[in-house]
Length: 196
Image 1 (tube, helix red, strand yellow):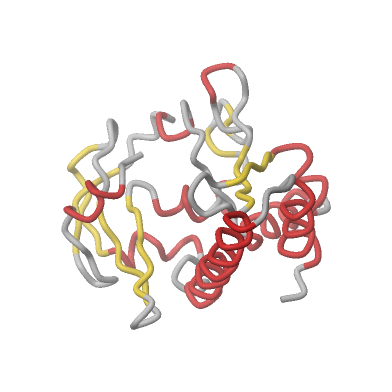
Image 2: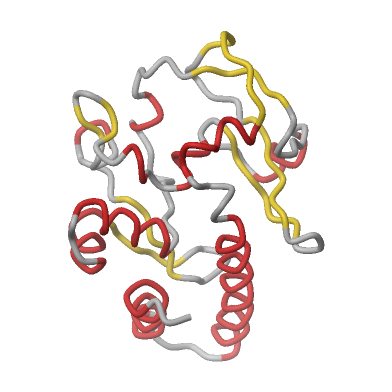
């Protein structure tokens, strides 16, 4: 939603800092979105909730592509053709609300990883919806979605992505070959095997 330079200028928020924003349940956050990136934990929780396999979730609702800078295989929700809406958006809201991806649960917040402290720093994004009728702390906003309980997993995930991205960039700079087999192997290992 916001580019990196704009994000760095936003005020940083800790878990007990207060922000003002309330959801109108307008559904704008579910439309024209191609940036709902999923971690293996997001995919696992959705699969469990829908009583489907991880592979079924990946095939039915997701797509992957190679990150332009990271060279890492990125998994995202595949938007529906109509209005580029989330595949889980329904007439009555989100069909997977209680296990929605971290990106969605955080909205309108974003977060950055501080690798020195192994913590997330949060920020309030400028979004075209919502109201100024609700004031809460970051902790209060996230309490219903296990986001804070899952921080350790997500810090480890971000570190793995960075480390693997470094290796991939170095490899791809030195050698010219089709990246697809490497990306497929990484997707299988990181999303389907869940052995790490």
